[in-house]
Length: 389
Image 1: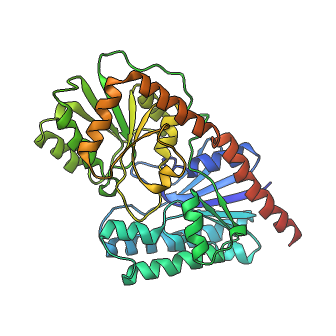
Image 2: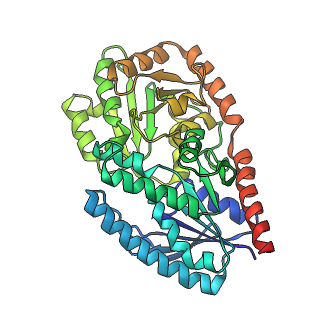
Image 3: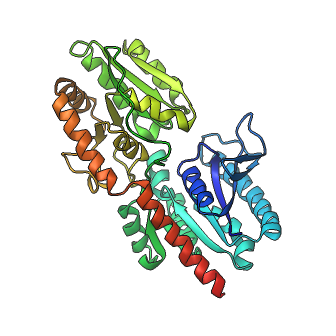
């Protein structure tokens, strides 16, 4: 039996794309273990859709630098000993670590010494996330330290998976050979995100966005756009699916602007229920402020998979994949420009249909059934090298 362990500093199964990757490996005959955080009410040990889940008693809470350091250190130590113990029993051929933080890859020291191949999947760039989150520049000592750790983690790994070409170029500038890297776009699992469900006929024009509700995703721009549309789109409804530390502040903002009744916060829902919410929307909105961290949000691909037109922040990583005829772009941080886009699509159903069709065409070229084969190739190459070592 080919055995793989995946480490992720997040709760499972809400950890996307970790769940998608793990279940893809199970479907190909791998035995897959996950070491992750333990959320409230979750079991410490569980089997979910064939994946063996081991949850560690570490709670995730956002805060300052000291909070992140202590939380990451606790998870690192517990994951190191848990992975070491499991490795002695189960003899993993591959260990995959999904960041952040990058240095979690070194929890795989003992498996590597035993011959396992190590993959790091860089979902976000830690230095850039820190710069965006704390408003500091690239010369800040913490940013420099994170850059060193990023380079060391990628260099120590046998293979690096990134989620867009921009990340590939960034790591190449750090000296990571392109031959040991693969681009795996963060697209949805086609078994979950399938098109065909109709839009609700309740008479509302419904916008939707989903994901973690944190400041760095700029959801306040969407909320501030709604008052600008009260008179021109009286039947406008906005659904924000997800949860996070900024939820209460944003709910208060909506009420203070007089649009509390027009904006619905659902809270966190199971990933399997997200497609149904998207299906009821007329337009998906991807609000992400201009920042240092390159990102092509997976929610954009989810809207494309379900045939929904999307309004998207105009940033270069997204524009490198989606032309102006596939999504509607608005200026980062501008609620006025976002409102303009919403009003245009409200008035122009033909444009909504055209955008949805063109966006879907982009998605079809990189859907999960294609990306999954690239993912498998990484394991095939590493396991070929493993068998020869």
